[in-house]
Length: 174
Ligand SMILES: Cc1cc2nc3c(=O)[nH]c(=O)nc-3n(C[C@H](O)[C@H](O)[C@H](O)COP(=O)(O)O)c2cc1C
Image (cartoon, rainbow, N blue to C red; front, top):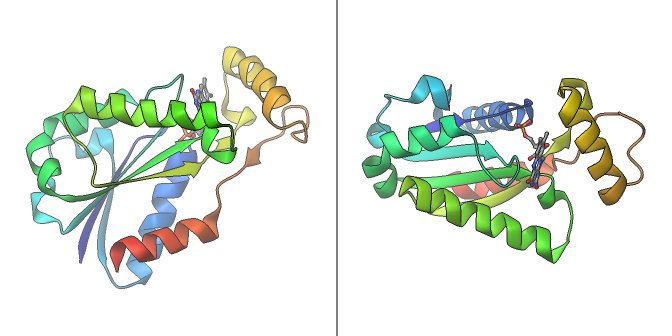
């Protein structure tokens, strides 16, 4: 199959996930194109069999570049076999309020872009203290104390389950 991956990232974890998907799907014999949402802006996904979109949640929103791409290619994306990977820290836990929040994020994404991805999956992201600016560093330190007290002082922590992601990609592309 011809598969297009379009991603947006702020600190890099979604880029890592998109590159992993690229490697996995390529190894499975698919012809895969990987672009950031900004690079993909004018690329009509109509010539691809499947489209994987990925973005991460920051203060309840996905990246503007991803939304711009979805709006620009709304007609083709609405017809395409789309998988949306929503990357967040809420997905690393089991707090019902956090999961409700994630559903609201996806609902808002659809409202704002006019695109309802055919399949949505939530993927746990990471604390990347080494990539944060001053404000993010202290805000995320506070969140870490609330959500995971095993996170050491300013230490990066990845929650992405690569095995589960591989199974998900295999299932979607099969
Ligand atoms: C400033 C900031 C705000 C965030 N807001 C949320 C949020 O509202 N909900 C959530 O579940 N995760 C939130 N996160 C966690 C990110 O979604 C998570 O770190 C993800 O791995 C980021 O992916 P990226 O590196 O591709 O940008 C936030 C992270 C930062 C730095």
